[in-house]
Image (cartoon, rainbow, N blue to C red; front, side, top):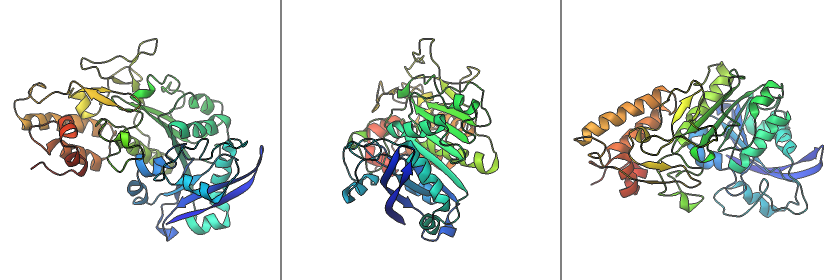
Length: 383
């Protein structure tokens, strides 16, 4: 059930009045006592809930979700639409067009605190034990600012900013500004991400992962908020994002450590180093290669990690060195198993990925995406 309302009060910068939207089980006892807070993105609002993690993924596992505006511009009823990512619009700074207002990260922190103690919030959510926060691109900025300013301390148990730029959460952890867990996931578009590469100084709280070949905006394989994201590239960080989200939640609840961090191999000047197919290389802190997406490992194409990605030099199974489609599928399964064993993808999503590779013999995973897109999306074999 989705609940819309107004959150109002005062922070150190003055009064505020902003919309919120909470999605929770009708019966709060059906939830897992964890709420994921998301400051809305300027263009696609609560996109982490709808597109990147996905509502079925979150709600089938008992998570609740809460979005809140974080700008103090004047409010009217129409602006409640900004929390709905299916409604197009051009909004900035937390969902509001600036009208002599201000951006205020404290609103997000105060809202998260209220989710545990406010009478209405408790009636909607029940007893909440854990609060997490996520945001992507534009909306990753307030998440990271909350951590580096100390405003997340004692409020959020786990933070998952992704496709992020320009902050150093490890320094904040070392300075005692945040005692929760944080995982950052970036695409290839964000480049070397030197500010996020794991320096080994906060291993009990911090992980960073970068996905070779993936764009800033991937193809979600669902109805698109940006129609140009359809038919762009099969390379996506979303499966990895979902896997690490659950690992972060388990890190908080049970103390189980996520996999070690890995980043993209880069030269001293930050230029990414590529393999023979032109694809970025994933390495751990010791410089050892770690598994990439199976079709990247097999060199099915050159995947160009741009803002909205593309790919080129797509190869057939013969050009990849396989005599039959079955030989190709065996190699694909082996690379996928490596990716799964590295805990970069959930088992059910790995099974879906393999089924997509089998749909249209003798085409590869990438060729099927390019030439049989509807079959690829719906996982239906070609006639």
